[in-house]
Length: 260
Length: 156
Image (cartoon, each protein chain N blue to C red):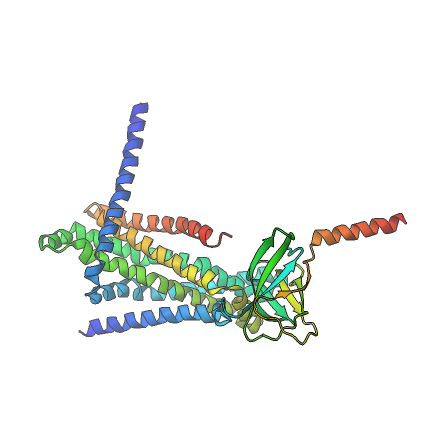
């Protein structure tokens, strides 16, 4: 009885470890395909279109509304202390440092990551990847590498759009609707936010999230059981794992970057 | 060919929009447009107590920001705090007998270094030390002093 439980525990532990190992081997293969991708920028372009351009609408609308809500909520709290002028720094700091990179990563995981997993999983289920291999084309380098770098490049740009539109949304609510002073809103923001400390660290965060989200999406698709049920499970796992990884990593990155 | 071209245009517009957003964050939201770190000249000031003064706190004269606190060190010989002030190069006419005080912005705000100009015809240059300094007011010490005075008054 005890032995059975131990066997189950050991088996699940080994399965998880083997999965992590396969994911890293896949990542090495994907990154190794970069030299072959560079002479063919059209492949990369198509993926930036799929992951980046098609996500712009949801990113822009969410960024605007998140910023507006931050402006509204922040105003109610800050107003109690007579610190309305700090609204700008509050909205901008929370967007640039945290919400921009994190919410963008979560939205991209839902909007583009799930699509990547389903696409790769179906390619596997319908043996398109095997067909490529039969033609002596490495499916990892031909199919996965452009998708990976597309996501890697699109993520920081999307996060920057999210933060910028969020700040504008907060400005619209704070200055336009609630009557915070326009000059104080911007000057407090510029006085307290540092380019290297805040903006660059936010970009680094979103680059890391770009790697993690696309890597998990591609791995789950590539590693899916090649059946319809398998692809459906892989798509769910892709979104769940990507969201958990982004939130967990965000804590670690925040502790490292803004620790002192 | 038509669809490829549309896609290329959209990707181009996407990248432009992304970089415009980054540029907006850099110039409008953060302080990149203000004087960057590293340029300007350094002044030293020794304080008996700097309170909770932090690196990057503003240095101001007449309420106008002239620079930032670049570094805070501790001198083991004199047991004083050595604060390095980085002043923007445009403000190069600070008299040698200037006073450096540590004040608090607002009741609970952050602490900053305020410079009060003296009357000397000579100006401070890179690496010079400000001779006259006044320490930060520590709230507990003030309250302690106040209570002590009260007790003395009531005993008289």
